[in-house]
Amino acid sequence: MAELVIKEIYEFINSVETKKEDSKEMIENFLANNSVTPKIKSLSRQLEHIHLSEFKIHQVLAEGSNLRISGIAISEGTWNGIFYPAEELEKAYIGLGNKPLRIDHSTSTRDIVGKVIKSTWIVPKKWIEFEAIVTDGDIIQKLLNNLIESVSVGVLIDNVEENGVQIARNLEFKELSLVDDPACKDARINPIENGGNDQNGGSQRN
Image 1 (cartoon, rainbow, N blue to C red):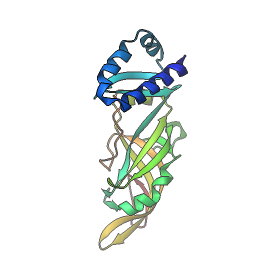
Image 2: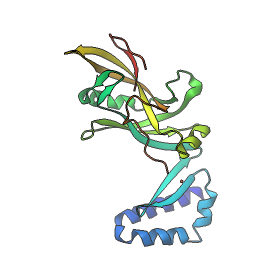
Image 3: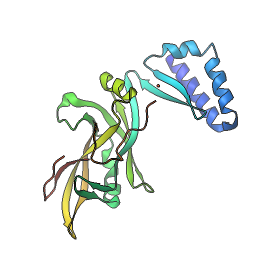
Image 4: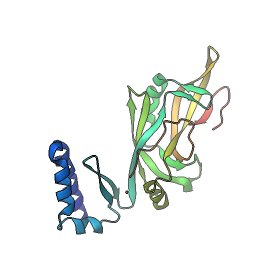
């Protein structure tokens, strides 16, 4: 039944997005449909919530106990005293995919709470966007409650001085962490509504 209802919801969302002029009435009718609402309430794990926002339905779907999140991993800028240029981020962004999602850059396997499943370079913004799956139940609840809102990349760099400026070259992403206060202030998780360095290179956290 869960798979059927989720399919029905996806089809409805697609119909709303192609008929925006009638979307408010369509959504109200959908939520008022007695044959659907009880099924929605029964999907406590597969379907976390459905609500109205700007005449669209937004949903957080969990596959079993997993949660998909997205956001900005890092942008061009000076973080922890080192400048990360757009051209280096663009060369390295694909390497963030399939990397572990951790808590606070911990190296313990116990603190792996998911996995990055996609990374995308956004040319106009000069930043890397990510999608990740979170598998830890406690962390999922904190994300749904908006208690965790930021991320930080763990990345190996060549720290090169150019014209008196420390610049990150030859980036190699190692992980993405959920954090409270990232060096890169753009590094945030999209809303879910209801480190150290040395002069010759090293591991950076932004």
